[in-house]
Amino acid sequence: MRVIDSHTAGEPTRVVIEGGPDLGTGPLAIRAARLWTDHPDFGPSTLCEPRGHDAIVGALLTPPSDPSCATGVIFFNTVANLGMCGHATIGLAAVLYHMGRITLGVHRFETPVGVVEVDLLSPDRVRAKNVESFRHLKDVTVEVPELGRVSGDVAYGGNWFFLSKHDAIPLDFARLSELTSATIAIRNALERNGITGAGGAYIDHIELFGPAHGQADSRNFVLCPGGAYDRSPCGTGSSAKLACLVADGMLAPNETWVQESIIGSTYDLTYVPGNTGIIATIEGAAYVTSETTLLFSNDDPYRTGIRA
Image (cartoon, rainbow, N blue to C red; front, side):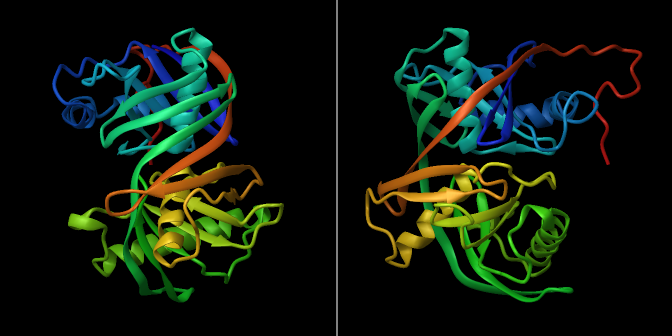
C-alpha cells in the first residue's frame, strides 16, 4: 500500500494513494460505510502501531461522484470514519500538489458529508471551506466523576463536538495526561446521560477551550475519537466553536478568529452565514513528511495493527 504522510499544524495525515480496498460504486457516503462494514481491518492496519499511531488520520482517495471535484476522499481514524476533517483536508491539498495532481488555486474535494472547497495559496498554505456548521444544544450540564458539574455546548463542524470552558485543568502542554483523562470522562458522562448530536449522533470529540498563550483569540485541547489529542487546533472543532460564537452574537461575518492548539500551532478562521448555521473557512499550513510503502506479511501476527 502506497501512502504519503503530512502534518497540518502538527497533526499528521496519511493519504492512501494506492492499494486501498475496492469500495465499488455509488454515492460516496455509501462507499464510506462499506469501508468499515466490508473492510474492518483496513483502518487499524493502516494507522495503528506498528505502522502508525493513534493520532494519525487517514485519507483514502477514491473517484468522486461529482465530476467537478478533483478527488473523492474518505477520512478515517483507528476506530471509525470521520465525516469531515479540517486538518486532513489541508494536508490532502498539500499532498495532491506534491504529487502534481493539482495546481495552486481553488479545487473541490468530495467527502461523505458534502463537497468542500480548498484554495491552495502556496505549496504549504491552504484555505479550506468547510461544510455547514451549527450549534445544536446550548449550556448542557453533566456530572462528571472527579470533575464535578461540567457545562458546554453541543455543536457540529463536520463532526460532533461538546465544547466546554471547563478550566479545572490549565490548558498547558505539560498537563496532557490530565486533560486526556478529563475529556474521556466527560465523553463517557455525555453517553451515560443520553446526550447526543442531532438524530442521536454520538458525540465523539470533546473540546476544552480557554485563554490563548500566544497572539491568538483562544486555545483549545481536543480529544479525538480514538483517545488521542489533536495536535492542531482541529478544523472541524474550530468550525463548531465559531458556530457557537456566532449563535451568541460574538463574531461578525468575515471577522478573523485565530485558534491556538495545545501545542501552540494556529489556524486563521472566518465565516459567512449558511442556510441554518455558518460556513467556516480554515487557513493553515501543511507539510509533506514522507512517501512510504506499507507492507503486510501474511505471517505477521500484528498485520492488522495493535489494538486495545
